[in-house]
Image 1 (cartoon, rainbow over the protein chains, first blue to last red):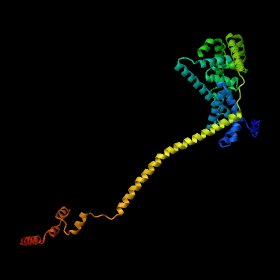
Image 2: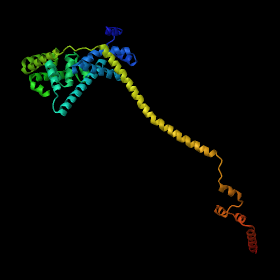
Image 3: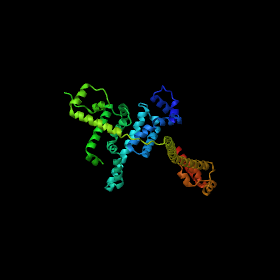
Image 4: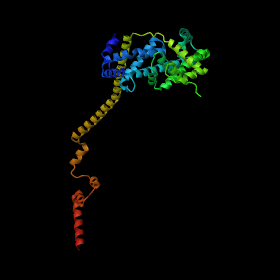
Length: 198
Length: 174
């Protein structure tokens, strides 16, 4: 309801990009209602992207919050060469990839320092495997490849949009999706690969 | 001879893009490409099926938390800037104050000393009372005329000196 009422005031003839530009200008001028409108437009999309990386509501909320804070703090530096949507997705993708990398490093540090994987981590991994077999396979993809695959297949972004978000060509994105699917096929066919990676 | 399909071609096929007929005919004839395409399609379907329901948070709370966090960070940043400038100004202010104090004390001291009449010591008073300066002082002077020397002599010595001069004058005239 609130979403409708807030966006209804905007002229229908404006494109999404024009609406975003207007909201950005208003926010930068100190209009806090523009903040709410911008949040309503993108909070769900950004949260979903974050959720796909951490698969946990609280962590996804924390990640999405960080993404929005980063975006609003640097909104004045947004050069409008790309759309606001692309810009926000790019921030979200980079932030989530960094988060996943950091977490995987922490995991390696723990295993190296203790010499063995703690029982709690083992049980967590087993629970995840049991809970969702295929999602575990997807998790084993490199973060960037996983992000591209999820954005295309589950978030239904176009190849052109993903190319803009990741700063690569459309051909590269298509190839990346193909190789991600190929890697999944190999993981399904060869469970040993999966054990090694785990 | 037609080459095998590339990664991008498989994705275009999967996405239902219009491809030249030779691509289709190649897949029909090439077992390798057909197997790849089938596996890619199967994996695509698997990945699509994993799209589970994502639990949504309370968006109002979420928005509020983002707004609060933004506000608190901007306040922290402002206070950090203020603290930094405070620390930068404090030493400068202390230096300026100390320089001002030193300069002020010096100027006041100098002015006070110049305004005071010169204080005479006991030795100065004695020399004032004595009409004839001591011989050492005359000798130490830069230019001594004959007159000065004559003045400094006693009356008898002056008479003797006058006689000498007169006798010299007579011999010179001769």
